Length: 302
Image 1 (cartoon, one colour):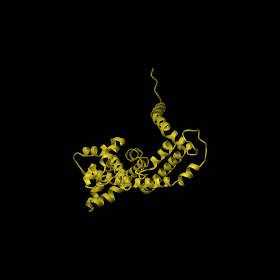
Image 2 (cartoon, one colour):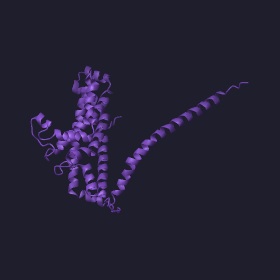
Image 3 (cartoon, one colour):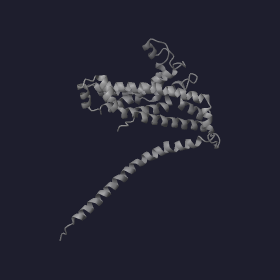
Image 4 (tube, one colour):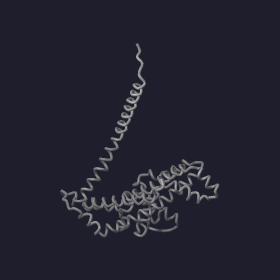
């Protein structure tokens, strides 16, 4: 004999079933995050706190460290080479960030207007980003020689990496070349999210190409521009490979930027405590720059 199920019981069973499914999905999602949590904990979180602890010691990698408080931080600011390296790093960031963002946005704007072979142009511009930094650095060492292809193309003879006056410019050219392709992809994705109806409305109102770009596209591209500027500066501030491979900080110290100075302090001068203090200061500077960019570029009207 079949017994009829009360409607309230049906609702209760459906509720229990939905709650079980929701709990199953939540646990499954949490399980998939475990490898990422382990990776970031092992390679980023734990080393970061270990480095913070080392910054308050006189660790030399050869003897047990002793706690010395803020002495490493104070001595860093009294070191003329540290201050000069900060200035050089700021120059390097400016010389790379502004051309990279401007060139990437211009190329993305042009590619977005191309109807045919868009994927081909995108691939060609993205290619430098996937070339290993060591390989591209070695190649550009040859290209930027006084009798290299770059000088022959410009009909000049400049020792881009041998002259302290031009070495940072040569280094910046290679870094810009390496980063532009990646940000072309980012900006192109942002441009394709701009509603065409707004551009058509601006065109009907008599706006030219530049006016449409400046007054319609740029405000809508602000989140993309914020992401690109934050990651570009972070990439440049932590760029070690190209300065190390191409110039090793020279000639003199003309291309010694913060990551290279930290490496020297730790592994050439065996001052791991001092190097850790400099790394912490670099992290603080990065966070301040990121906060400033968020304040300037975030959409406050949202």
